[in-house]
Image 1 (cartoon, rainbow over the protein chains, first blue to last red):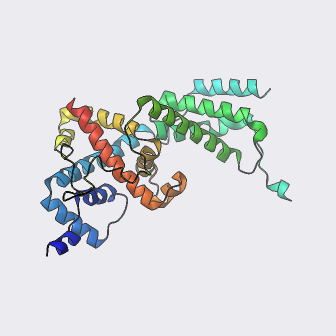
Image 2 (tube, chains in turn red, yellow; image 1 turned 90 degrees about the horizontal axis):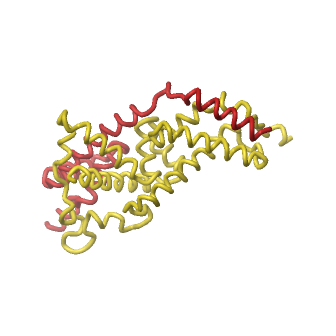
Image 3 (cartoon, chains in turn yellow, orange; image 1 turned 30 degrees about the vertical axis):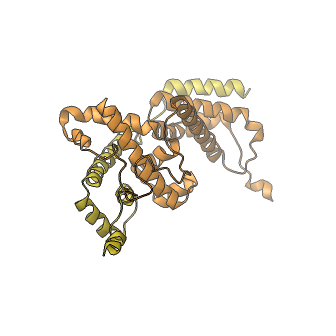
Length: 90
Length: 196
């Protein structure tokens, strides 16, 4: 029985792995079941999962705030670059 | 016949045609306007210097992107050396030993002292949220380039996992290892900075 439990239950290393990648990869039904069983029983991995959700959300915000379609090189820099190219390419 | 396929290179048109695109490419990856501008400039200078080596096998646009990408990687390498960060090599099989016991009865369990706590709840508090975001940004920048690029590519450009692997030249199992380790390292980094 203990052996069987061991096969079904994930360890914390594997549980945090599945938690970390679940936004990027669809987990199998077996993996999802194993993960939720582990998270119910393990308060540490449960905290990690909550941390993971917070960070995934915030990272998305940080990334989308940092740059958009309208981000352009400044005119001053463009002029500088034109001059450099002209000089070197004489 | 093969001569017809060769691409030409017109430096005088670079600023007009590519500077904004290259700038965005850099900005996505370094998250800093001034630095992104400097990297574009360095890339142009390198390209001009190696102009005689341009064989026309790829388009000048692709060629410029490759040069810029190498400049960004060089920048991150120099930063990593400077900070001597404790991030683990992706190829190191024992990379998670820091967080999980790898043998004995507790194998796979959290190493004592590294068990997660609820410090991330601060992100829900309006007053503390800004500080939490600031620390998260710092910790993202501390990740090795390939690691943070995974998140930027995913979150910003919505690349599929397959495309990410192709651009970064890694296998999909490597990608999952990178994401797992990056998350563990980020938690450790944020926790340390938050508590000190």
